[in-house]
Image (cartoon, rainbow, N blue to C red):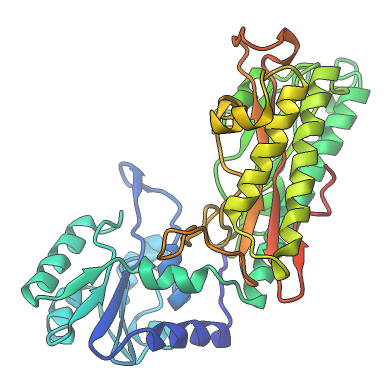
Length: 439
């Protein structure tokens, strides 16, 4: 997979980071490491998002130290024998050039160099609890403790920068959204064709399978993955393709059940392009929604649209994701009362959080290099963070009714509906990056 960051973009990020570090402070980041599935079979390597954001370097066994206005890189040395099996690596000098580093050393010398480079400092930003190179992190922590350095998680600085997306970053997210939109459109068309065709008489009509006498969730996943890979993208997260009562499980990833008529098909699936994520959910069916399904769909859709309309006022009003959450709770709760699913008045149900039985997640999360991207949701005073230009996030209301819930009218049992869009706030207004995908 080819990944890239323009040099000017990279240098801008690095300079912003260095400007946040006084000469008495440093920040150390480690790359991700290669993990093994079993025996000598490796999982696909995916660079640590923080490391990638500030280095644009796509290799494991790497580290970068920002200290005293300098960028010090640690990378793998070239090994022709190993490269026969795993492919070429950049080597020290090429890696230095790619990262725009001031100095470069072999990765194996990291601890020794840090002994020298951190002596006399007062503070270092470092993720001690990271999932990669666990033993190495513990050894480095001992060095910092020996130097009596104050340690703070790197995210205290890096997330402040990553939460605001540049024009180039938004272009990458938009590309991921566009690929995901095409994938969803192909699934939608496939379902239309499947419904219209007598498959027993014409099973070869569909290019994705030689025999589709029955339809399964994994058939739809195949269309999505094919579409992602066609444009050098991969799934941003395990696709959630659920039908019928499976749609009431928020993170259902098995995607193996047969799909039948009269079921809602909920698809929460989107791609990662050049390490940037999209996150989209739409609902489909092999036929028309029945009246109960349509009622829930209309309620979720209305909430989705109204929350986005509210977010559009961010340039004139002080709005937070908490405000958007409160709006979604109000609308969904009011709708549930209207449908006879909840009893009592609106204020009472909101205060008692009765809605959480059916709406248990939040309306939104940040979006970027990670599907659930970095960035605090509250400021230092524990108040909700106000939305500002440069932020990207999702809007995803949903309602879910267990099949065995005998406290609600029978016609609503086993229904799960979610509608999710990706939003970017520019200097001139709100942009719905997924607006082209029909709801």
